[in-house]
Image (cartoon, rainbow, N blue to C red; front, side, top):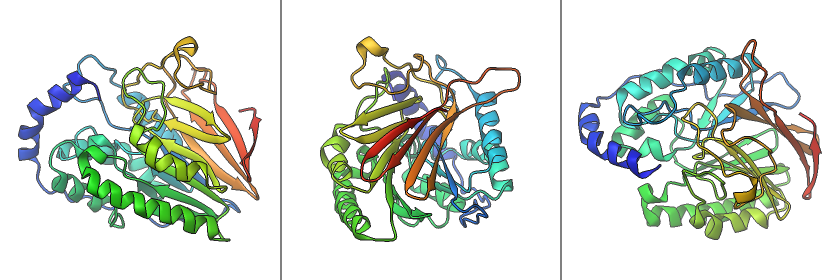
Length: 325
């Protein structure tokens, strides 16, 4: 989040938080039911609408709504949300908008499993958590593991500035233990790590998260089952391949897009040769026997040529082949 956005949020934060009242919302589906041999898991990030203080940024409501309808039509068996579901986490109207745009997925019975982003923490934490847990009542812990079709999705809360370093340290101990346990579990074939903030990004708006690089990335890099790390926060699609490990930024869910550094100025080599503004999109993960297939699926609009997709496959241990989208 840039400085102007921070100033705007501070100015309106007290007013919005004071107006917030408990909101009763029906919970989203949380039970996975699939007739597929191997379920398809969707991943999306940063669906928040542009804040009314962000007068200089894109307003992408039609694109966001079209993308979520597209996901409902393409019907993944579950959807994992990388955080920033809403702009202001303790503002009732933002959650009403979230419920409205997510209604096609609710109607399709697609279970949704979220992590929290920094925008969820705007305002009063207790109010935000009430709103979140009304929609996702099984979200007892703010970091957890979800296993789907022999793939363990390790869901992190990367908001260390909000939860504090004590809680972040406690999460790190849990995370290292879980990564070791999953490595030893014969029923788990792959591990996918998810969190809101990116360890690596070429965004011109947000930065790499050094804390993640220093404390969380090593357990991922050293684990032979760890296949891909997904994050959001950078409102774009980025794909990095570092020391035989994949890092994917999937922040194209409808938030105002961020410009990416071009090739000659990139800090990290991006395997996706995209423009400075990347397409609205979501990703899918599907295990086919001993190979994990990851696809970036751009927004498709009638009469408009879609942006280039990105697909790659991972077979353990750490061998990679690129597939044509």
